[in-house]
Image (cartoon, rainbow, N blue to C red; front, side, top):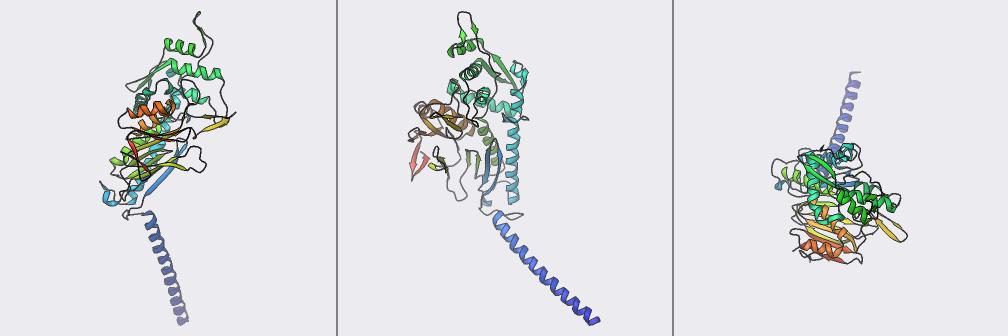
Amino acid sequence: MFMANHTQSAISRKIFVALAMVILSFLIIFISEKTSFFNLGSSTYSNKPLTTDGFFFDTYVSVTIYDSKDNYSHDLTTTDDIYSLLETCMNMCKDYENIFSRTLETSELYKINHNKDFINGVDTPISNTLADCINKTLEYSAVFGEKYSIMSGSLCDIWDFNNAVIPDDKSIASNCISIDSYDLAVKNNSLKLSFNIADFQFSAEKFGYIDIDNNKTNISLPDPALNLGASAKGYIAEQLREFLIDNGIQDAIIDLGGNIVVIGNKYDDSMYKIGIKKPFSEENQSYAVCQVADMSIVTSGIYERYFEQDGNIYHHIIDCSTGYPADNDILSVTIITDNSLMADCYSTGCLLLGKDNAMNLINDTEGVECIIIDSNYNLLLSDGLTYNNDYIVLK
C-alpha cells in the first residue's frame, strides 16, 4: 500500500514536471516571439517601427515612430515608453476632435455655430486652442481672397455628396451672400461676428438679389457657420509633431488622413518616401513619389469626395465666390512646407486658384513648394523642386 502510494506520487510528480516543462517552453517561445515583434515590457527597442492608429475627423489616422534607442533623448528606453507616447497621440486626436468638429454635437465649434448669441454678434468666449487655430487659419487663407472663407460652414452643409444632390441656385446664392456679409474677429479669446451692410449690398447685387432703386433684397440669409475643415487637421498635426519632439522623438511620421508630417529620417537614415495618388485611380495608384525629411506634405484633390451628374463632376472643394465646386484645370495640389497648418490651407486654396495662379503664388512664397496634377494629368513642379532618381525632392 505504501509502495503503491509512493509509486503513484512519483508518477504524478513526473507528469507534473513534464507538464511544467511544456508550459515553460511554450511561455519562453511565446515571450520570445512577442518580444521580437512587439518589443514589450522592459526590452529595449530594436529599430522596428511602432505604430498606432484610430479613426478621428471622419478619417483614418496613424502615428509611426522609427526611433532607435541610440537616438533617444530623455529616458525613452523601452517600448512601453513609446507606446505610451503613441497612446497619448490618439488621446490628443480625440480631444481635438471635440474642439474642431463641425458635426460632433459635443464639440466646441458645433456649439458656437449653434449659439444664437454668437450669431447675433455677441462676444463669445472660446478656448485658447480654438482661438489659435482660427487666427492662423485667417492669416493663411487671406491670400486666397473671396474663394476661401472660414465662414463656409452653411454653404458646405447644403451640398449633399452622399446622396448626390445639387442645391438650387437661390440656396447657393443666399449662402454666398451670407459669407460675404459677415466679418469675424478674434480678440482676447473672444469671438465676434459683425454684419457689414456695404458688403451685403455688394454681394446681393452680384448674385442678382437686390433692387438698387429701392435698396431692398428678396432673399433671406442663412445663419453663418464656421468651418475649419481645410485647416484643423493641419493644426492638430503640428501639435502632435511638437509633442513627439518635446518627448525626445527624432524620427516619426504622422498621417491624419493624407495630412502628412515627417520628423527627421527613418531609422536607417533614409528619407521618407511619400506617394501622391493618381487622381480617380481605383487602387490608390501613386502618380509620383516625394522624398522628404522634416517636412509637412498635404494633398487636396477633387477625387476625394465627389459625384457625377449629367457628365459633370461635383466635388467637395467649394469656391466661396461662386458657391459651386472649383471648376478649373487642377485635379490635385500637394503642398510641401515645414508647417502643416499652412500646407493644409494652401493645398485647398491653391486648388481653388487654378494652376497658373497657384504656381505663381507658390513660386513667390518663400519656404513653400507645390506639385500640381492638372486636368490633362501633367505633373507640374514649383521652382524649388526637382527630380532625383525618379523621386521628387527639394533642391
